[in-house]
Length: 254
Image (cartoon, rainbow, N blue to C red; front, side, top):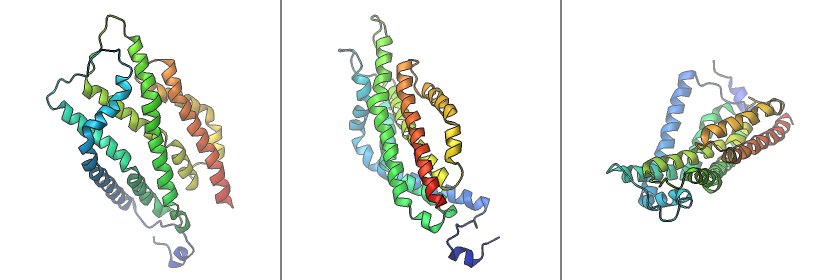
């Protein structure tokens, strides 16, 4: 049932879309995301080799001197590696466009005044996503590979496959980019009324436990130092989500 025109005039959110309309809109937004990523990928693939060397640096810095370069087994593995690296770089480059499409999908359920927050949402979400990748590259990956290399005995000579290790690095970058979206998701859920600051605060202890479990799942090395390095920013991000949720809740009540 459609809302009367007077409800719209008062700034009510749209609730006219049915279930299949939402699915069709979701499909459309995902396609637009992919178009933007592919467009950026056309540019990043040109720098595929440079990006590959850049992403392998956290591993190369931890290897013993004279250990040699990475190996490859398949003939087309370098091409596949460059394609994967280019895709991940394009995803980070196109992240504002991706988050803009996310906002456009959510916007019909918001009030017209709330839809004007699209620019702050896109900027904040993009910044946190990039910060997650930076954290993984500068702290998590070096700590993880340092432990792995030190664990090797003196009789073991590392011969690392480039495809496998690039896959690990790109996974960590995307995973931490998603993890750093935690406060943004919490703020958005608070804004649309799904969660409250009281609920978030009451589940803090469970969230801390979940952060350590998730850090153990994300990091392939089983050392406590790397797991702690990964878990601590998750806890800080969740706390940021709680504090921001309280501010948003007070603003919406006013």
